[in-house]
Each structure stands twice: as C-alpha cells, then as structure tokens.
Length: 328
Image (cartoon, rainbow, N blue to C red; front, side):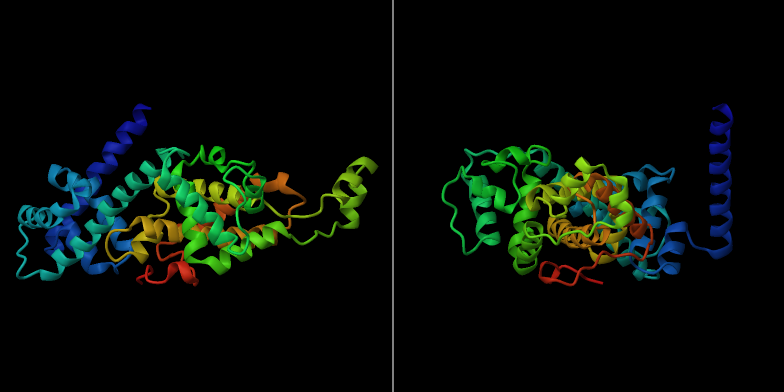
C-alpha cells in the first residue's frame, strides 16, 4: 500500500515536471496544446476535462462544475491565470468554451436524469396519468383502452393490469423514455412491439435435443418463441442507459454529437438507439427463452461499452427520433 502511494506521487511529480518542460519548449500551456493539437469532439473534451480536474489550481479544478452562465467568465479567469492574451489566441477561448459547455452540461444532464429516476409514478398526478395514456395511444393507435386498470396493458409489455407498479425501479424516467420512443419514432416502436408479441419460432438443433430429457424437451418444444415484454424491456434498457450515463461511459457519445451541452433529448435519443440495437441483438442471439434475458442483456452491455471506448464513437441512429439532435 505504501509503495502504491509513493508510486502515485512519484508519477504525479514526473508528470508536472514534464508539463513544465513542454511549456518551456513550446511556449504553450497544456490547455493550449490540447486545443491546438487535438480535433474537436470527445478526444479533445475528455483531455481538457482531465487536465482541469487534475490541475493544482483551484480555479481550474472547479471550472468543470460551474454554472453554465458562468462559463464565459471562468474562461476569462483561466486565460488570465495562464497569462494567455485572448487577442493573440482567440481560438483558444472558443475551444475551451465548447469543451466546458459539454463538460458542465454532462454533469447537469446526470442531475436531470437522476431527478426523473427518483420521482415515483403517482396515479393521482394528472400529468403522470396523461403520459401513461399517451403511451398506449402511440403504441396502439387503433385499439381503445377499455379502462385505466386493465389486462390490456399486458399487450404492450407491462406485467399486470396497472403499469404504475412496473415503474418502481426507474421512476418517471422509464415512462419518459418509453413515451419518447413511441411518439418520436412511432413506426419503429410499433414494429418492435409487434415483433415482441409475435416472435419467430426458434429452431432447436439435434445436438440441443439430445441434451434434453423427455420432460425438458416437451417444455422447450412448447416454449420456442423468443419474444419479450416490450415495456419491461424498455424500462430495463432505461436502466442500462442510466448506468452508462452515470459511469461516464456515454461521455464519448455525447461529446461527439452535442456541439454544446448534452440535453435530456439527447439522452432519450440514445435510449431509442439502444432499444433498436437491443432488439436486433436479441434476435441475433436467438435465445432459447426469456430466461436468457439477463445473459443477453449483459452481453449487449459489454458490446456497447466496447464501442464507447473508441474516442471517435457516436451512437448515431438513422431514424426519426434522432432528427435534429445529431450534430457531427
């Protein structure tokens, strides 16, 4: 433990020495070198974020959490601290502003998403009820809902006759995402719903058959469909998107698509992308039954994380929900 602590401070000391030498050789501070030598997007913003967070200057450390309205003043203070003339280096201020808008915006987006996740569904709240009923209308436009408490909710993938109990894990965030998907990309959402209700039958190989007892085979023979509960999976994918956001994994995506601060709409658009991709992945995986959901979901999560480790990665879907949101 002591060795690791010593190694940490030793490496930190070496890094500061290297930064000092580079400044003397190039005549530029680290922020300048990053902005001038790294292309815009996740690569630049993440390097700027690391540089600011690891700085020994309190001003630079706190700049990643200032209010959006204070970003311009913060940049002026940074330029003054670093003794950089804005008239000689006008592009630096513009680049730093873009990076800080993304960094601060990402933190604020986490707060907005967390607020929705923590707000429970309230059947006595007219706005909550209105959103739920709209979800039905968007997904089943030609089928009237007979009553608020109804077994019909199972037709769009809820577990019982009152969907409010299914929102406990993700709160209003799950409903917000499902409604966004159903409204902004209605055709695709209805197609995914239809596929989940009318799944293809899975062909069981002879090798698999040989591993089953007679009782197991009878069960599998009657349970070859690979559909899933649309709404429940949507809430589960909401949980996936939430954890990717909070862990910072989605920084790569958002810093590449949002020229300024990422918003809740960007998060919901990302949810739509994940729903599309998971649906395709589920079919490709060809699971034996719904009991394999956790395995397939975990495999899907790992694939998305691998993709997001590429600094040039953007989860850019080409469907209606993404129109007007992607800014490469």
